[in-house]
Length: 236
Image 1 (spheres, rainbow, N blue to C red):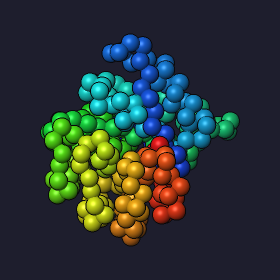
Image 2: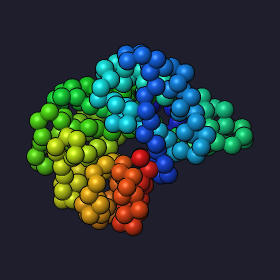
Image 3: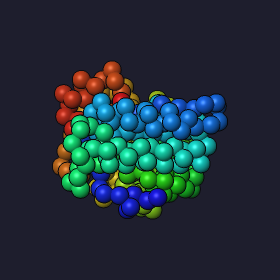
Image 4: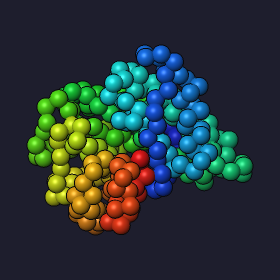
């Protein structure tokens, strides 16, 4: 199943909660648990969901588990849409209903492994892929830009930059994010750092890029993100 088999998702607006990954044991996905969690998020008003992110411990899942998790979430979103507007309300579905967004988190220890993960997640049905840079060896700002550009160049779906320097040891500046925002396949970033001032710089540096969304994944600085003008602070 590929995203080309489905109607286009809604724009990156509203809340896109990062979901935990339900398991029946340490290595087995809870199939109904995943579907139930997605349905609940949509029923409560989410614009979409993020699976296999850091909240879902995506980097600890095997690559095929991340793909299977993405496919389960894709099926749950599509079923909810068919039942009536992505899970919200009781009106019958229609062709004009905007489909909820499915974001999947990609990870790997090298550029090639990240690229392969992005390809798997896109094939499994992700609308967007959130790209976590390798974390064993911290990268410079220039190396981070090169990595995200290389991933986006070959990706079958648009990508999001995952900025969480407290875990990866790699960080970006507003100038480097501005460069990334010029890439037509990089449509936004999720900043989960605690640095509200730097996030405000990301927002200011990309304000003229209409197709680029700065999202926050750091709950304690959510108010600061809104004050700074983060347009879509929706992936907690």
